[in-house]
Amino acid sequence: MSEAKKYLAPVTNPETAPFWEAARQGKFMIKRCTACGEAHYFPRSICPFCYSDKTVWEESSGEGTIYTYSLMRKSPTGPYAIGYVTLKEGPSLQTNFVDCDLTTLKIGQKVKVVFKPTDGAPLPFFTPV
Amino acid sequence: MTIKGKAYIAGIFEHPTRHAPDKSTAQLHAEVAKGAIEDAGLTKDDVDGYFCAGDAPGGAWPMVDYLGLNTKKLRHVDSTETGGCSYIIHLGHAAEAIAAGKCSIALITLAGKPRTGVMPPRAAGAEVDFESAYGATTHNAYGMCAMRHMHDYGTTSEQLAWIKVAASHHAQYNPHAMLKDVVTVEDVLNSPMISDPLHRMDCCVVSDGGGALIVTTPEIAKSLKKPQVRLIGHGEAMKGPRGGKDLDLTYSAGVWSGPRAFEEAGITPKDIKYASIYDSFTITVLMQLEDLGFCKKGEGGKFVADGNLISGVGKLPFNTDGGGLCSNHPVNRGGMTKIIEAVRQLRGEAHPKVQVKNCDLAIAHGTGGLLGVRHAASTAILERV
Image (cartoon, rainbow over all chains, first blue to last red; front, side, top):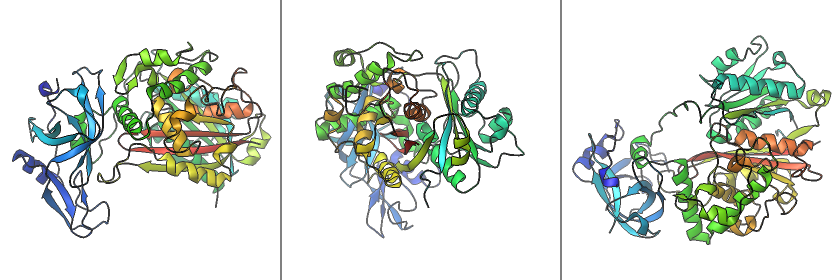
């Protein structure tokens, strides 16, 4: 099961360190550009849409819907479900779905963020609401 | 400016091996280089341009040295790395270099040993901390595309299976193919589920091997003995989720590379007699056929069904060597063999059972990276002169 999996700690870097510091507090952060108003993920310093450097951290609701998924059945560490979630705030992101019956996942299903520990900062995953 | 008609593919070679425990990766590069140079009727000292990608041990300068290329003559190198479609991009870049007078005889090589050796690691992208833990592999990345395509357009596993069925019909005539048995739609559906909704038979093979091309000027090509095949259109493109705003896994960067190539060639998909389409998975083929304009978006399932991709049976013969689904997928990179089989078709050198009659226009299209994550695409349109 994915719960038993051991995940490698994120390496982090100066651009993304605030994301991981917030993750340690259980907060799931996205970036928003104050010039064009667009949110994006994963976080960048320069807005990928308008190239403004006026990007700020924003706590996401952590809620979204499943855009797509695939249940990987052949894996040395056991089956796992990779997929994309479209956040309420707009951006879509890659993740794994956890803490649920992986065979009942559906496109459009509501999910929320849950953090899983590593030797460093915790990693965000998603689970059905 | 255009590259239309300014470069000819004068030499091709596909390594016959699919399993090479007794060879080195560099050796395979040398064997395919030698094969393509000899196919063209040239010598290695004629080569003045060299192209390779991430599979070449150490990159361009160690390979140029290992291959013993004539460094007094070599005046153009390009090690563009875009995964499996690198070699289709190289073909376009070679044509650009030839059109600009930067080289006149370009060698492009691909080789490696995913079955019996160690694959070189890929450098991490900026997304590494935000994605690497989630275990994206080729299987599940393409599975995610297929899942969404089915959701949006009603595409079925049966329709995807027809792509493998067509490939297997062609592979039965290829003595080097890894999988020579003709399979049915039921066989594909009954094969084990690997990563939903892709079954084992929706996936390509893993093979050692390689291939090489010689690209040259019209004048030199006309002085050689092989039938003349020229590049008349080329496109390249890249696609990714771009901050999470552009995520749409139902289409590939082929929607951009394809029209660029067709526009340059001055033809439409209807004119194409034979199509080499990258087939890492069945869904890869279906999406690319839509993206290239062989059918409307969402109608790929209907287009590929009922043997429509089988040579002599359907409207669009594809991958008549058996492709990645049945013949080989050297170094997990299918772009090179896509070009080689298209050239065989245009030369009239395909197996007689799969040779397309009066084959004068062909397409070779591929992608690199993961369609379900971020990727490159390249399209080449080739013409028999």
